[in-house]
Amino acid sequence: MHIKKVLGSDNEQSCELELLRDDGTSFFVNIISIKEHREDEILLIRSVVFNITERKIADEKIIQISSLLKNVINTSQDLIFVKDKQLRTILCNDFFAQALGKTPEELYGRTDIENGWPEEFVRGNPDEGIHGFEADDREALSGKTVKIEYEPVNIKNEIRFFNTIKSPLTDETGNIIGVLGIARDVTDRKNMEDELKHMATHDPLTGLYNRRMFIQRINDEIERASRYQHTLSLFMIDIDYFKSINDNYGHQTGDTVLQNFAKILSDSIRKSDYAARYGGEEFVVVLPETPLLKAEELAERLRKQIEDTHFSINNNEDINLTVSIGISTFPEHAETSHELLEIADAAMYAAKAAGRNYVKIP
Image 1 (cartoon, helix red, strand yellow):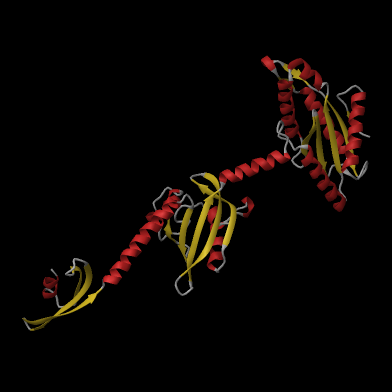
Image 2 (tube, rainbow, N blue to C red; image 1 turned 45 degrees about the vertical axis):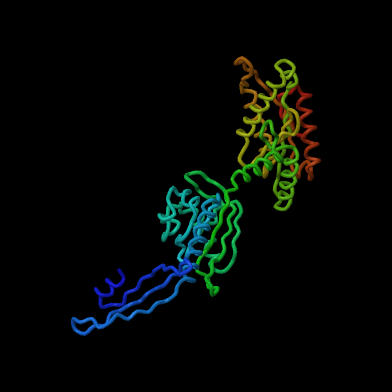
């Protein structure tokens, strides 16, 4: 076959052959041949034979290693990818491609936006806390290793969170030729951490801030109000005759009433205000930048709303609640959270002593 190609062409021809030695082992050669002729007469064929056994063995090892590497990265549940200096994908594993509903080959030679990643995740969106793939890629191209924790990524219209490492990819001379990225899905871990943080700061029954978080927040608000010479008001709220609900309908019904009350309370206050469950059937509301007169007006509105609300309990039965509310204001009545709470609590007990369903100020 090789001789036929040589005879049929005026150009140099080459072929690779596997040959057998006398002992039965094989070796590889590369034969390069060209014919010499005068007019239509072939004078001779010149050939050079190279032993390429070592190169073939090395090539076979490269193929084996490449196949092994491909199997390794495709077995990984991490997103693994390589981009060139123009930020075009030149290599990725199956898991990375599946995130876009494509095959690796469909992604090669294309940028993230061309491959279908949403633009805000590529370019960044500071308002949503999204730094953007491109900024991190370019930082890696500058020679830095970039670590991104809890990076939000849109995977098939679902926001997932990844811990990502991007490193500069270099050639054998040390020149940066691209970016190597590995991203691990940590959504479940983040959700668990968020849940634990929520549990540490919120009341499990009502979902409002717990007492510990309330103390932290009001101290922060007092410090801010003092720095900027603002006012701050506090409501201490107690549900009137709540014990009778537990006694007559049971604690489970009492819990349901507390949950419904907390929702009404949250929905009724301003966005700048925040509520907390202080203990039992006692609740507190912090009203930043609110003077006493305005606080009294808001408390009266809240008292009336609770009075007019029908709370559903067992067997579609409705009950009505009333609340007693005490108010204190910084710095008019006190300058520490402890004193504000004591004064608001005393005002709340004064509302109860007056017959309940009242708002009282010191």
